[in-house]
Image (cartoon, rainbow, N blue to C red; front, side, top):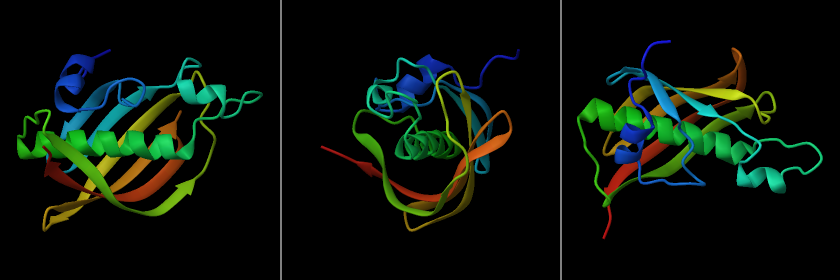
Length: 150
């Protein structure tokens, strides 16, 4: 196995998210300005599984979209050469065409991929897909913007 492009320590340095909302475990590939491939290892220990659903744990769709957004933010930070501080956040400004194709369960490895479609006026549009074993779990177009806070 090759070393990740970004391991968890580098991800923690770039994203403001922390447990239980940090949803990217490692970045496998980045083509700056174009594409990212990252992974989220889904475990039964995720807090949302206690209630979604106790008899048949399934990762909530909104969490899969959040994982894609975090991977997309990492792509933008790397592409723009930005070393974000605690005062930098990336906000969702839109989600279009979200389609859920298969459930994601504990033990699955969610492969997160995002492509930059365009960047204009401080808003970046991404085409994103998350899959398990090559089978699409969710796909969506995400729009995000980066802001300084405080």
